[in-house]
Length: 228
Image (cartoon, rainbow, N blue to C red):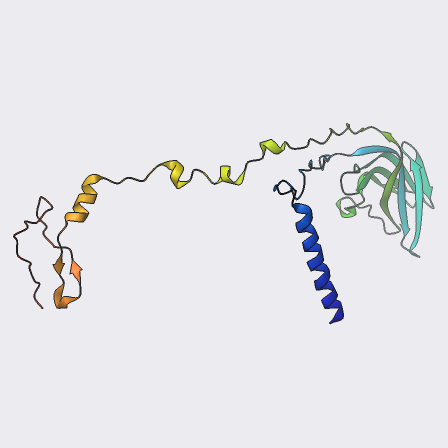
């Protein structure tokens, strides 16, 4: 109970302080937040080349894991496995972290089988090195930037506050601005001069079934009563 009371008291104090800060001496209300430029990001299909690849090899017999650091264009070896790295790329810093390497793998125990393709860190199932003895995956890319190179990001553009539409601009013209809504004079005259008859049983007034062509009733005409 004490904690809840303290939290409620803290919220009231914070709201009071925000109200004091938001008001300026000239009667103007301070803006809650300035317009912030949107973050500048690379496209999701952009990759940055690196000069070194870190490859993880799993030996299925005893579940032993070994990480090999192989420069691009060179070959690394683990037991009977030979791995040649043709290229290693990674995502730019503005995108979720990911890496991929193009490998050429051969095994001395099975000379007829040869793997050549891309292995992606976040999606290893897309191209898996199917070997009953070893499993190969990409850990990351390291080293200096190489081709493909990233183009520099443009500077953030802060939106112009004068270009932001005000709420009254988006609501459209008001009733007064659109002008008075005038109806046809003939409609108003017919509504005012239309005679009425008593409904059966005295339930109220109803419009006549056959009004006069002129829309007016002579003043000397007697009041007609509907049958009960």
